[in-house]
Length: 434
Ligand code: URA
Image (cartoon, rainbow, N blue to C red; front, side, top):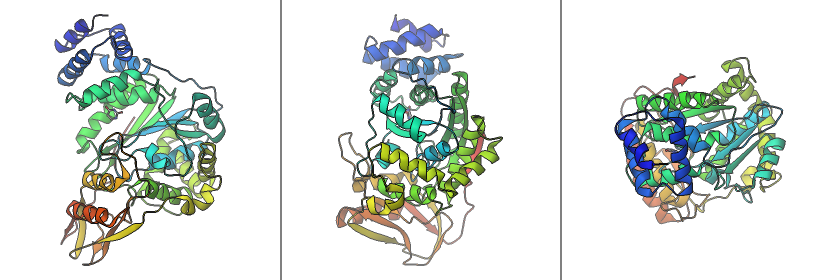
């Protein structure tokens, strides 16, 4: 393989054939493509885009650069992926809810990225639970509980792992082609038949505008379908936290309230909307509305919670977690209210700043080697549109130390806007694709 020819073709906007992408991805995985060649490739793709079917070919080549799973289960194998937000714990709700509706969900998840939280960090707030499973155990849990939320083994899409690290330091993360291939190569390696994507937009998302999110959603849906995985997407709002809590144990608590039918807010609503699309796409519901109804029923009748409990126990967590989750989840030692300094209406929130405040409390990583404190974060966050009097609590800060809480309060005060007059509220769902 001549990496120079492939890079030059992209530089000159000439089409390549599938075998070129395959050999480049394999070269990334086995080290025969150098760092400088990988960087030049990424920059050429970012500047010129990939021609023709290049995006699909690169995605498939990166998917096939490592281990791919196949399944023989008595129901469809499906999954959901979010591009990342704050207070977004849909995966914890949706994986068991889909399982309760007859699907199998081998959910290979990630850790926090930038200001956003990661599903693995959240579920690991459950004492004893381990997300690093060998393939045999992963298969066993998916077969028995219907879902498992695990970290990717070192062998999944190794071309992406190498290219992602190089993009991170060469200013080439923000390419629709490269983001699409990166996200889908890992998801599709899990052997999915169907996928539903939650592409976030707004202050707490990577894509700040609905237009940018729509463009990414379109690319993801077209590419995943072309690669043989039936895929649809919602572009959803991230101008405020999805759940009224941010932070690992605090988000597990929110997910448990939804799973046990005690909470019906945006987290439950979006879980039903995404689940409806996933079930309809997989042939487990007549249409999206019937699918959403099935998800709501699974949350109400305890069957989703039962799946969650089986998964948690099988992954090393407490056997009676669903019954006694409040007893098992770690609690921060310092809890302080952030009080409104004036009366008015909450009209804007800087979701990214709120996510970073949680990281500052120790709820995420500043550098890769940091350990995460599962107990810290924010709870009882008032939604956009809430009317407050001076001195009312806007949210609660959960911290390990008083000075940490004080530092977070300063950042959070600047992140929340209180105005005299209400402004129109953003819709939860901006667009539906696929
Ligand atoms: N998440 C990924 O996995 N890859 C990207 O390129 C961006 C977000």
